[in-house]
Length: 295
Image (cartoon, rainbow, N blue to C red; front, side, top):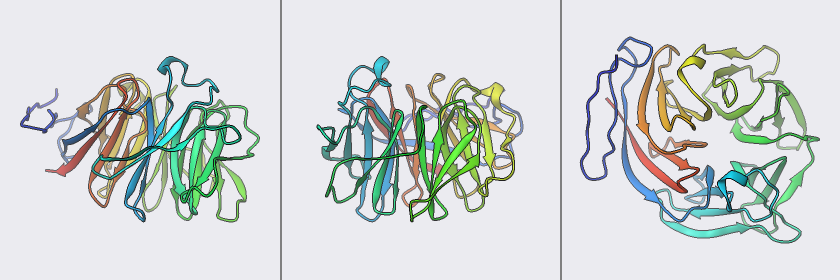
């Protein structure tokens, strides 16, 4: 049973609090207050927060959502303020010799914006001194999500092989033990985590790449997981794309709570400095920004 308290005033979004999907009320209560909606985005999948330059990058697949895994060369990256004001809709646009097909996962690392572009991992300098450059990682499957963590870049692999790519600042590449169909990566001060699309589970990943991933055992609660982040108190926030929901998971990994409902939430990200949650709605083609509040 879920204890429901509806709150709706102005820009406040209705939220659900209480005993959670797994039982028990000891888990932290988080609520999400909607503060902005960014329209005019073209099939958004992911965002990257640039604290140094005070902006947020948004990946746009463009075209038909049903064909957003085709190499059509029409993708682009937008740049907006943390509050959602558009600064440059076509900050990085596909062009001959510097193609972007359907850019999805984003991360900032070592002065570059790294972009998962279907079966390619590309990067572009933040000063736009050159266009997208493809990195050769010998993959024939899709890259889904990059994560800057612990001085390295980790890249999720959306194919059947159970691996995660690790890139260091000197461009060396190593492989970690992962799981199949990774669709989102996150990290706290000690561990890496991922969510999967096909098996709709959350896993703890060994950053050293030696131990096997450890499942949370919550797969029966979800449909198709897309994004994940971890709050300062150890609470996990995940997006369930086909269920049209954002959930929290308690630090002990036992209690699941519905945070908010939003259409086709893709690769969510939290600005921990501002306590802002960014949710790209893949099919509705918009970004919803929430203020996270505890208690």
